[in-house]
Each structure stands twice: as C-alpha cells, then as structure tokens.
Length: 570
Image 1 (cartoon, rainbow, N blue to C red):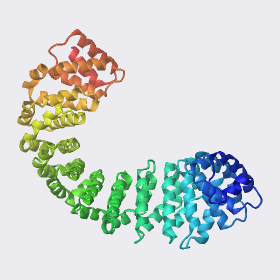
Image 2 (tube, rainbow, N blue to C red; image 1 turned 90 degrees about the vertical axis):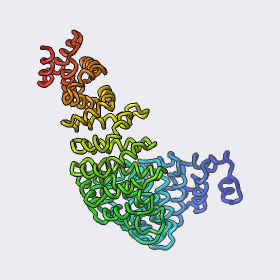
Image 3 (spheres, rainbow, N blue to C red; image 1 turned 30 degrees about the horizontal axis):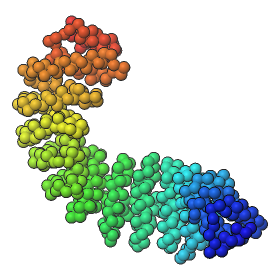
C-alpha cells in the first residue's frame, strides 16, 4: 500500500507508471468492510485527471457497491458521487460500468432521498454534486441517460428547479436537463411525466435570479432545436410558456435576455401546433405589434421572425392584415437601409409578404401598397437572398389573381424587363424563381392581350423556354401552360415560337418521355402534347410519329392522352 499511502500526501506527485498499481491498491481498499473516506476522496480527486481516468473504470463497481449499502453517511455519498461523476467525465468505459452495475438506480435513490430531506438547505453541496454526476455520466451516452430517466431522475431534478432556494443547485439541475435532452425523443415522455413544462413556466415567471433565467433560456433553445420533440414543445406552449417569455421580452432589464426570450417565441412558432397555440394567445399577438413598432432593431427583427411564422396559416394572415400588419411592413421596408440589419429586415419582411399574399382576400390591398415602388427598389438589391424573396412574394401575389397581374403589367411594367433578364442570372434559384414569376404573370393575364404582347416584346419567352427545359417537372409544366396561353391568346406568335425552337424542344421532351424509366405526371404530358398540337405540327417526321405512338402505349389507360395522340396521328 506504499503508493496509496504516498498519494494521500498532497505534496506527492503521482507518476503515470504507478497508476495501474495504485488502482489495484484502491480496489482492495474500497472492497474492505469499512473503506476509508480518505481513499474514496482520493479517487474523486485523481479522477479529474484524464491520465488516471482512462485506466480507472474498474473502480466504478466497488464505489457503487459502497453506495448500495443500507447505511451510508452524507459525506461518503458526496465523495462517491464525485468519484463516479469524475470517472464518467467523457469516458465511456466508466459509463458502461455504471450501466452494467445498475448505477443509475442507486444514484437516483440517493438523489431523491437528499432532495426530499434537504432541498431547502440554503447551500446544499451534495445536491449540486448529484446534478453534476447526472450531467457527466449522461453526456454522449444515451443509454445511460435513458436509464437515469427510467429510474426517475427527472423528479429530483425538477424538484430542485421548482423549489430550491440555492442558486447554484438550480443552475446545476438545469445543466443536467440540458444533457438529458440529448437523448432525443426518448426523453419526451419522461419530461412530461415529471411535469417539466409546468415547472419551467413557473420558474421563468419568477422575478429575480437573472442567471437562472438566462440558463433556462439556453436550455429552452437547445430543447427547441432538438429534433423529434414536437409533443414536448407543444406541451410547453400549452403550459403557457409564451406568457413568461413575453414578459421577459418586454420587461427584463438585460437587453440580451429580452432578445433571447423573443427569439425563443419565434423558434417555438416554427412548429405548426405551437404556432397555432401561440397565436391564439392575445397577450402574445398584442405584444407582437408593440415589438414591431420598437425602435430597437434587434427587437424589430425578432418580432418580424415571429410574424413570418404566424403568417404560415391563412386565417392568421387575414387576422394579421386586419390588425394593420401590411402598413407596418410598408414603413419597415421604406426605412430599412442596406446595412446587415437592414438586409435582414428586408428579407424577413418580404418573407411575411409572400405568406400574406397566399390568401386571395389579401392580394388586392397588398398589390396597391407594394407595387411598384417598394418591389422595384428591392428587386435592384445587391443581396441575392432579398431578390429571391421579392420574386417569391410577387409570384405569390400574382398567383390566381387577374387584377394583380393587370396592375403589374401597367403600374409595374418597368420591372418586367428587370425580371426577364434575371433568366440569365448566375444564381440558379433566382433564374428559376424569375422565370416562374413570368409564367404566373402570363397565366394570370388571359384576356389581356396588350399585357401578353408586352411580355413577349420584352423577351418573356426566354423565361418560358428556360422553364420547359427545367429538370423539375412542376416548373416544366408551368412553362408549358404559360406558352399555351400565349399561343392561344396571340395566335400570330406561333411561327415566332417555332423560330425560337420551342417546337423542337417539345418534341425532344416527348421523345425522352417515350423511353424514360420514370414518366412525368400524365397531366404534364397532356399539356405538352396540347402545346405541340398548337404550335408544333409543321415537321411531323416518322420518328416523331413513332414517339407519339410509344407515349400512347405507355399511357393506354389515360383517356385524355389517348385522345390527343390520336388527333395528331390522324
């Protein structure tokens, strides 16, 4: 026992070559009928060092056996907890030993007993140590984390958060929760059984303990960002977590804390169920408009992010418009600059407009407020993300609305050339979105021959040709339908379409569909053949006839395709 005795001297420096021998001596000591407290404490202290920890997983079993005895003093429990926690710190072999020897069960038992007996102590080191043990041994070891929760560790942890008056104990308990959520979906039911949502809401709503509030907000952020916890997030919102977040966002004296609370609301609202529950709370929706009017740019940005998530629901969109959101957005976009914050505000604002414009009831008013001045200004932005979002908002605004299309082709005619030229843009998604916008404009301008002529004159056919050659079938079909409208409304353009090679492109597409392993949706093929019938009948070669016959055979059960194919073959 020479090395063990030497190590008890604080001045002694343990050599790496002596670690194996020391561990053997410690195992003998810890398995004695009455193990010495100083030896247990030595394990706890040495386990802080990685060189010792890596070789000491065999010490877990004797430590746990001591913990399982009927009578163990609080001091011994504390040192064993320190030892187990330190040995398990980023060391999976020790964690495996804890799992193998039912360590979770006896850890939770002593944790529960201590909380039930001494949770109101103003300075409870043992509770803090127990929270840290849970944190250390569940870190990156889901099986042990799940075992701890199965044994009921969330009950003492949640009790500490709910009732303790000791700041450090609460902080340590929140740290344990942060580690346990890494178990993902497996933690969801355990969290709800322990009534964590109600407890967190209550603690967040208390005034004081600024560090605790900040720590809880950090935990909430990690919880919200963890996948597969939608039920738990919804339960948090049902427990009215939006209320304390709202109050913190309004009245907390620390700017960063206010900002974090607002961000939590926005993040929660990204989940559909949470978004509906939050929006139904008038305290939150009323506060939203206060934040949107704030002179603090960070607050305004967070409020816009919350609004864009609320606007994912059509009923909410109508309600938001009735509260005057569109007027706020006009002011926001008018005042926003070209600095990073201004760009962020512009991007989120156009995202909101895109969602608001989905509802047919909102289109006319939005069209009058945002066309052409604001849309034209932001289309000229040097920021590609904003340009894309403006295009997306405009396409939403024009979809299935002949009036907004007509307004665009009159008041917004100067934008037309700008958008058409984006077909040549170096950013692919801007190419695609600008071309889809032109197709939407064409489809919504039936009967407006002057407007359609303007689209053609400004070179809009380039955008439609881009679409019918796109890889995505939905985009291809949008181009087909728009070209059909042009050919049908302006018959004089058929020859020009052929001169631009539209008919050859269509025949190439049909030829590909005749032999492709996976066919396009039958509706899209029908639209292609209809357009061929409209403009592409000048050079019907034998090869093209064979192509049509093959398509007819592949879609023998589709009456519309059969009728179209037969009309060409005749």
